Amino acid sequence: MATEEEIIDPTAGGGKAAVALAPRPMDLAGKVVGLLDNTKEQGTLILETIGKALQEKYGVAKVILRAKEHYSKPATNALIDDMAKEVQVAIAAVGG
Image 1: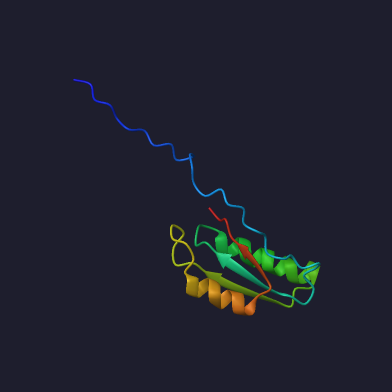
Image 2: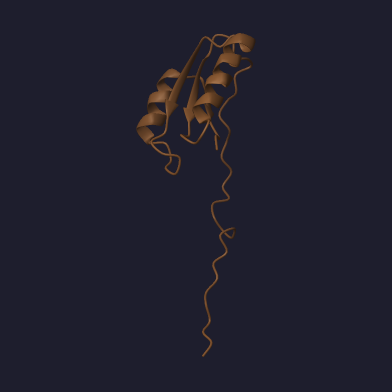
């Protein structure tokens, strides 16, 4: 006996509300940049390399590197809030 199964389209619906982008600085000179490691393989190395390049090429004053608890979990609000208190620009890793 055949039964009907419900198929759910994961691309259908969802929030389509536009989210305004945060203001972008004109340059990075003198800025504090936060780097968020997603804890995937090579993420830390990638971010350390990016941080060094940002300081050498663009005059970034300070780089702060933080890591999420686990790549499969979003960053906690506490981690985001702590970074937001210190940095003007943030970059998230996509190691993998």
